[in-house]
Image (cartoon, rainbow, N blue to C red; front, side, top):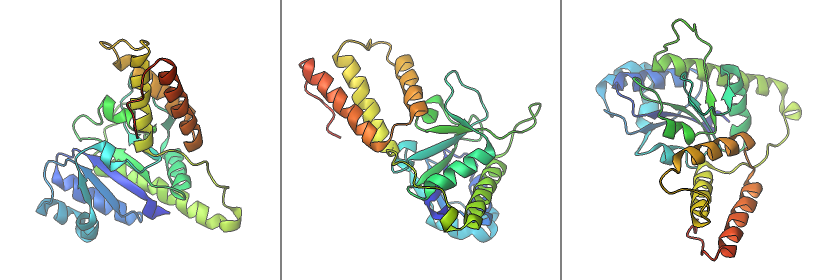
Length: 249
């Protein structure tokens, strides 16, 4: 189960933070680390601060985009303390641990952290299904990257141990099959194209509407079969409008 949970670091500035995150992960039994366009990696500083977790750095994958890092994940939780104009479904630290463990029984799940200086961008947040907020001192809520990873991976481990303690006979039932992040991105592209084809979406101002629609579908969280139905509806609308679907995904 824990092997299906990955930690994704986006555009990490200080290589030492990557090493410290690897150490935090290993103490909680997590091993899958994905780095999105790190400033410096590999790095002797990262290896030194990883202490006994150099194996996690050696197996870490480096990719160019967050979309690539979470493409196969059904659940992607963004760690962000900043409130945004459009809120994504919000979890507390303990709830994040339970959700990650529950869904990792069936498919990969990702815990996503942004750059140290400014955190995840709005666009990167929109790629995730949920947001998690650590209940720190509101007068000084700044956590360094490794500390935030340690807190959330601790909650993941506690949820894992609690589920193990119940025994397989008491485990919760099977969860719905949710679409992957990649499948959702194909759906959003199809939706935006359909709205353009039918004249509903104004070409000069697509951003605000699409953000609101992403928020709506994140709250609803359609299952894989439901997403297929929605894709079929979009294709039907395009056909009725005399437009051939441009999305073959």
